[in-house]
Amino acid sequence: MLPLLSMMLLAAGAPHARAQDGSAPVQEGAEAQMAEPIRQDQSFKLSAGVPIAVVNPYGSVFMRFGGYEHQLDIRSTIQQPEGAATFGFAPAVRDGRFVVAPTLPAGVALAQGQRIDLVLYVPQGHALSVDAAIGDIEARGLRSDIDLKTGPGRIQVIGTQGTVQAQSDEGRIEVSLQDGARAGSLQRFTSRTGSVTLNVGDRLDAEVTLSTSHQFATDYSLTVRHLDGQEPNKTATAIVGQPKAGDQKARIEMRSLLNELRLQRRGVFIDPE
Image (cartoon, rainbow, N blue to C red; front, side, top):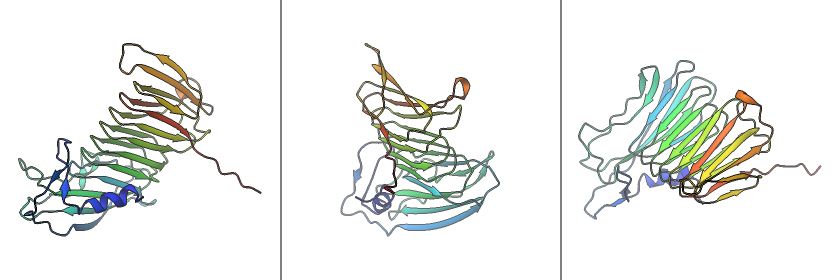
């Protein structure tokens, strides 16, 4: 199976697009004229510690670790049907954040088949927020705190060194956390109708709370509390590792009103020698 990034970059050239309201993709007629995708590479020097904000209501966003220098590299893939309005795309510092936000002219709707997908190589130590609206989000190997939000899209996070917040209205969320959650931190993974899967190790050292009206699937012991007549109708708590006490306790919340929550133990490699 192709990884999510490969599938979505291929999709950038496919003859369909999802409507901005999250409805089903709109199929193009045979008369539609589609040009080859436009690919652009850009690099930006950042001030140390400046946060990065990405707002892309026209496609998906993928992030990779970009190294230790304060440089943000962006690769964009644009599907631009003939006659469609051109995206405006001028990343820059605004109100103390480095903002990456493609736009269309005021009052202009997204054309059939039109989209822009972004790949960001994010340097260490720059907090990142992403709002993809309708697209998928994928983060791998980042060394920053990240806050991710989409509507019907999926969210996948692997190997991030930092806190993670993830919210999807309808899509599934899959997160794999490093051991040793930051003391006193609160991380939330929420989907209204999608499933939420969290992969952790025994040294996570955090209290995990799960809330759903569907079912739990877990490799850890749960203390379950039923909330009959409420939504969600049950909550559960798992202790993974040895959380600190009081204000220093690391906490994680998983929530889906209508789908499954999975708290899975990550396998441990043992040298046969």
